[in-house]
Each structure stands twice: as structure tokens, then as C-alpha cells.
Length: 147
Image 1 (cartoon, rainbow, N blue to C red):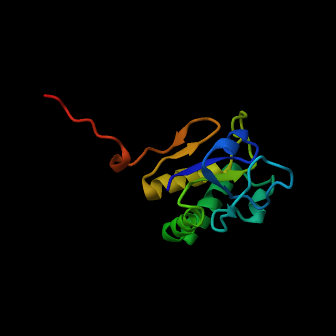
Image 2 (image 1 turned 180 degrees about the vertical axis):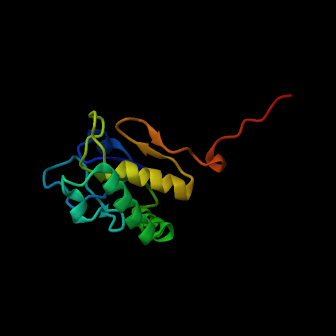
């Protein structure tokens, strides 16, 4: 199972063979072109974190503490169960923010960093094409030497 991230408004998701998973408190009530198949209860930030007065650093500390409290085994199990319930397909974790805009930040990139640290798997942000973290060496193709 591969974990990717994006925002609800990413129209490219419609044509992808992935499982859209909400990691936000709310989900859109307007048509997306795809159906959100699940919501991760362990990755969703706490409501108080959405207060505009909360700094990015305070948010990061609190959100990472929330993830650490839930624990990597439980979060992995939750995501694997969602994948299994949807034919073992890869997941795309969705929230609202358009992080392509200068100065924008989001908990999905914080989760991607946390996930990479614990799993060794990089997380692709679909809109930017950037991978947060580095793929585990075990997942990298190994090229042998001819000499």
C-alpha cells in the first residue's frame, strides 16, 4: 500500500486508481468527481488546532504529539484496513489546503513527514509531484555494477 496526499479539489484524482481518504474534520458537500471512500480518525487534527490564532510551530508540535500518541502501529493498521476494504489499492489522503500557494501549510505535509520517519516510505503530494521524505532503500531499485 502506498500513501499519497492531496486536496479535495484535485481533479486528477478522478481518473486515478486510488482510494480517496479524508483526513480533515469535514468533507466537501459539493460534487468532487470522485467519492471519498473513508475517513481516517487517527490522522484528523483536533478541532482546536483549526483556530487561526494557532501558530504553525504550535500546530506542528501538537499534531505530531497526537500522531505519536496514536502510534505508528495503530495508524498503519487503520490505513491498511482502509486499503484492504477497497481492494488493496493505494491511498490518497485528502484535506482542504492548497499548499501550492506561497505561505500555505497543512497537516497533510506534517503527516507525510511523520509517516516517512516511521515507515521509511516517502509520501507523494499529487499536485506538486514532490515526495516528502526519502523512499526506503529497500524500496529503491538497486543497479548493479558491470565491473
